[in-house]
Amino acid sequence: MAKLHISTKINGEPTEFLCDPNDSMLDVLRGPLALTGSKEGCGSGDCGACSVMLDGRLVCSCLMLAAEAEGHEIETIEGMAEGEKLHPLQQKFLEMAALQCGICTPGVLVASKALLEKNQNPTETEVRYWLAGNLCRCTGYDKIVRAVLDTAAEMREATR
Image (cartoon, rainbow, N blue to C red; front, top):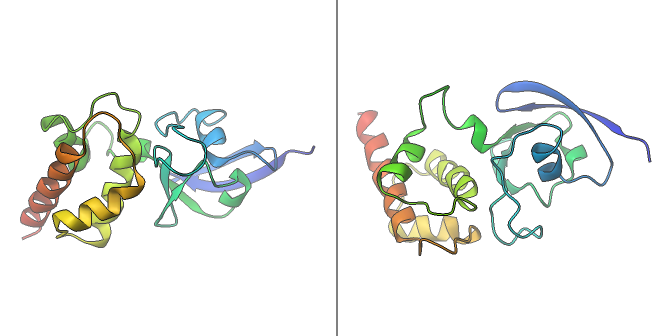
């Protein structure tokens, strides 16, 4: 089977890679590209641990073929911080202990960032609905939801 040459942009950087036609984006991220932040929790799109942004849309990278990245922009958890400066969501998750084992955390953070980019003032119900595709076996979600709501409030205040 011939390898495909893919040109894309990942976390703002032009990126090229070779992949088999049936490779998932998650496999390429974690393998040849060494971006191991996205996790494989289920491999069937049910847990959200592998969530990335594709052209501004939240997707499960385990369900996306790597070949589909051609000409598109992908954002992973590795692109969330600006250098050494954590994104406000990342900082708040640390402050509020909104993570435990870490398997779900990258996907939850990417999904939370996507929510706050669309809705700067979500309700608790909206946060819980938005994150329903991200399964966590450790935290019970309350700290995650509180961290997202607190971050949203702080980000709104910062833009005033």
